[in-house]
Length: 132
Ligand SMILES: CC(C)(COP(=O)(O)OP(=O)(O)OC[C@H]1O[C@@H](n2cnc3c(N)ncnc32)[C@H](O)[C@@H]1OP(=O)(O)O)[C@@H](O)C(=O)NCCC(=O)NCCS
Image 1 (cartoon, protein in one colour):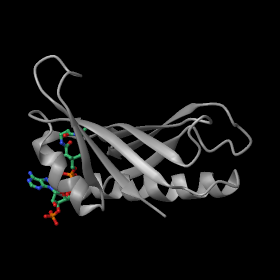
Image 2 (cartoon, rainbow, N blue to C red; image 1 turned 30 degrees about the horizontal axis):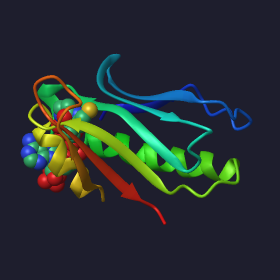
Image 3 (cartoon, rainbow, N blue to C red; image 1 turned 180 degrees about the vertical axis):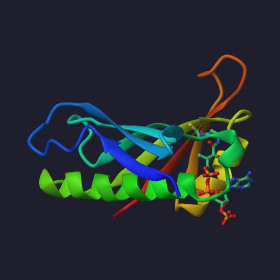
Image 4 (tube, rainbow, N blue to C red; image 1 turned 60 degrees about the horizontal axis):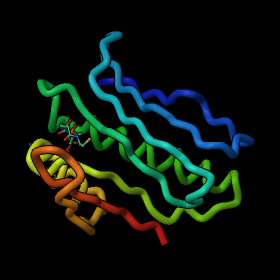
């Protein structure tokens, strides 16, 4: 079973924007990665920049383990800063990230907006999970 780790370890006192990464490794090989960011100007709203699993290992629960860890870490960090975690959001590519739609829905996200003119050859879809 892949090992899940988070970097950098939480710096509760840091109020500036910073990026964290969750890595899933199996026998030293990276099999999944999730990157997300906290911004002090948007307290309580956390953006997932990307989440991906090795294509040969999808649908084995690795993505779910990473996103569950992200929710746990985000909740912990928000509490340590005295902030209510309100939203976790992600923008996906409409054509390229088809499997992500079912994945995000399963984890409580809702599709809130499609933006046509953002990416070059396809629309962008905004998904949001609410915690309040
Ligand atoms: C989206 C992604 C991260 C999911 O990771 P994963 O390890 O496959 O996810 P899990 O095994 O935890 O699957 C959880 C749920 O996601 C959905 N899901 C995953 N793969 C799916 C597929 N091929 N078709 C339909 N639903 C799928 C299902 O609801 C699944 O639950 P179930 O197996 O109980 O039906 C992975 O498919 C991926 O890397 N996709 C390409 C990159 C991408 O689209 N990233 C998102 C935007 S950056």
